[in-house]
Image 1 (cartoon, one colour):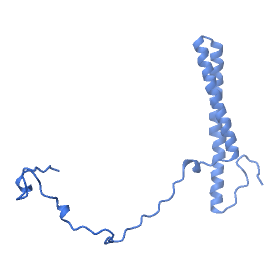
Image 2 (cartoon, one colour):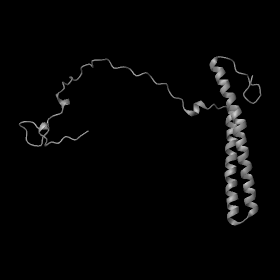
Image 3 (cartoon, rainbow, N blue to C red):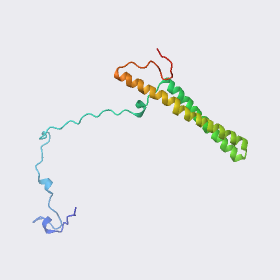
Image 4 (cartoon, rainbow, N blue to C red):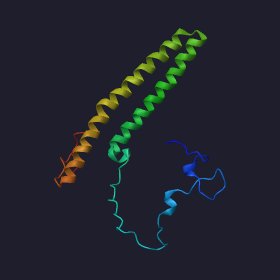
Length: 150
């Protein structure tokens, strides 16, 4: 949008001093008095559904929590073993670095296996149980580990 020049004749008032522009068209519009109603009633916005957080979508049971704790411990062991392997390499002790590296690999491998096999199986079983409970159907009677919980 072009900038109006105050020196242009068409924007100057007849009896105003040079350089002043005329008032905008919006100031000439009638203004509504305070407290009057709008011409059309305001539309109510539809209520938004409450978004569930990610923690509500991921099911958890005491058994899943137990396996998740084991998973965290294995990751901590892997981190400590990495530090041992690194320190052994820095001081030139190949036995210490080798043992640290092997322990690290085993801990990470077992942690990944727990996450991909055990925890995933328990989580999918819990999701199926929740879906069955939502539909009003009785659950399978198992808690995901094959043990009857009745």
